[in-house]
Length: 531
Image (cartoon, rainbow, N blue to C red):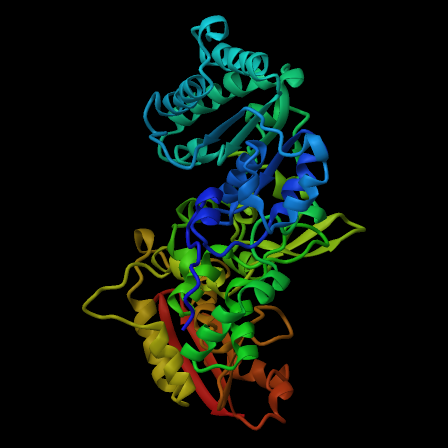
């Protein structure tokens, strides 16, 4: 049995190192950042290790030499000689928690950090801090810290955007208050270059209208840099180099061999890319939970709800199918976000629900898609109440049962369950959806969710079948029509040769035509035939 201690959900570098938790060495990035330019911004999804990396920076700049023994940074820093392990004054703003919906919630957090710094460094007497406003006090703290310690100041701001994301939809007025406070407070850094050793901001989103990006134009955004693609998350080499005992234990629990377990881990939690050519990474939160619980669960998705994303998708003209099958975006679109923009793609990318899967250099376009099955099916499942409605508890229709029907070779039962499911959906003002709109969304969601259990291909384009579902023993070729004769659907399957690509397959092949009625708001006819 694996007895190593995994740092599930831990964000404190000192705790991890002093209490012998397993640590994947990311200190090469600390070395590279601290020895290049001075000010940085990093965007990564939630629970990807931003806070832990910020804590690692804090320990390094505080000169905590012993915590880095055995890590990449240790020998590199020791090679500096007399200049090694210089202790700098550090101000760290951890903003992942707080009462940011309260009028003075953000102000209280910022003020509390300054007060703790004043106490820690005993800024009294000739170093006493003056000034009534927060920005002035912040500037004076920076100046007096350098005067007292003789060293420039390190400023670390983790999850800077939490006060904005938390209020963006629920309390827009408070978001404006928080945004204005940011503008005045962090603009204090703008003219303080001579007092600063290092500045590092992290967040999920890059709000273009927040002052740190408009006023602090010296901030180097490394979010899409190839050299820093692996700064957060777990690479394939790190997975296999650090977690062999955990992989073996999970494989044994799931009755898999080692390679099969690796393949399942990759399918569930890998697939994130944060640059054009940079290394790909696994979701660290899900990976550590899977090893800890010895189960392929949906840990990252279950730790937060994508309500903001659903609202953004509902308010945009981008179809669910387009999100699901992949989209394209410019670097400006995926780097910058404004709440006023009705394009949800930047937020989908920055929050980790879409990731980079390709780059067209000629047109300067990124291709984006769901990174893995955990995100894909977690997000699609979260859409069920919005697309299929809240189903009556007395008449449950399970998508899992629908797949079981097809797996067992019972397409008639599948159609009956689909009819019951669609019949339970209510529409505004009694209006049935058009096939191009709501019908296609409903069908797409149903078939894609079934894809969690089967190989489901959805094309919805001229010259290809609307849907193909493959199970171990059967292949089903579907054609859907709206307010048309059922024979039209069956004829199209034959005329277009939709079954031909599967004719040599040993599995039993069915062709299924389904007609929807805009009047009945449901299936009005269907036909099943062996191909």
